[in-house]
Image (cartoon, rainbow, N blue to C red; front, side, top):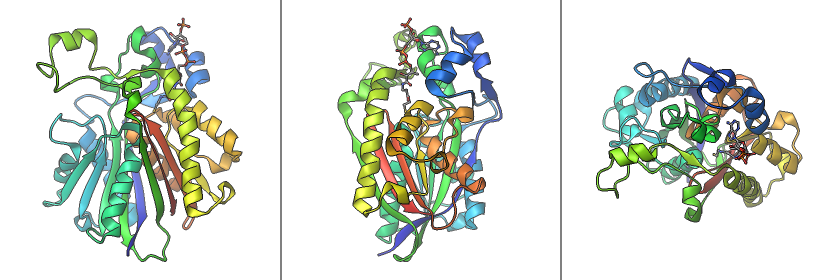
Length: 332
Ligand code: COA
């Protein structure tokens, strides 16, 4: 059986930088509060009419393809993780396929929020292991800023979420080569309403009504305390699951790349696992939480900065809306 390996990673973030200072002019907040509770100093927001989820993910994909030294026409399939697609229908996978000029290959969307990229990676990994496809583009990208309530009511989410795109090229290699060793996926829908966005809702009489707009049901809503409490437990559990499954210790991990939910969550995991700073990658300080985008963006940046080298043992972990949570262990 074949194995899948990340051949290259790329990313793109919009040019517009939004500082905490700028947010404090839109809502009752301040730099100290945001930095202390989330670790975020600034984030990127898209510019309407310039950035779309499709063109951002195409830029990230082209970078990943170039670094992987793979011609776009070699790609057999696209797995696109997002909860903020350009259209309600179709999904963003097909829009990316069109933008990249890839003729009639299959494309699917994964709607698993912050865990979306690891779910997407796992789906792509199965297709490669069965021999169905040889090269798959796996994307995680979001435009969250257009769905944030920037009034005082929405301030706990509005300061956290941001926009950005990341992509990796996954390729088939022989089983004795470095590559993806395992993925573990979980969900617990009991907590769906702790972090969710109701509209557009197909079970309403009309998907977008004036009532829905008046209620603000098209905004992302989050119970920050509940998310925090569950996240710190599930992150540690699912990382341990990956380590145990592969019979490796936490000391052997070269780099932990956690979903960038909140710097305090990453720091809690780091402290519990007793990992030194150089073994945990964080970029939430200047990019915010880009949901499905955080992990591929982080992989691309970590590789650029020389913090990921060939054959390194990399652990990915995520937690988010659903609740869903997931991990992946791989050799780069
Ligand atoms: N600026 C200033 N004050 C704010 C604020 C903001 N942006 N957002 C909320 N507050 C206020 C609240 O209104 C509340 O005021 P009150 O005491 O007068 O009622 C106070 O700060 C404390 O609110 P609370 O929600 O209890 O704060 P918290 O310490 O839990 O921090 C989060 C809020 C969102 C930062 C925190 O819960 C968190 O980090 N949760 C995890 C979120 C996350 O990781 N999400 C991504 C999931 S993938």
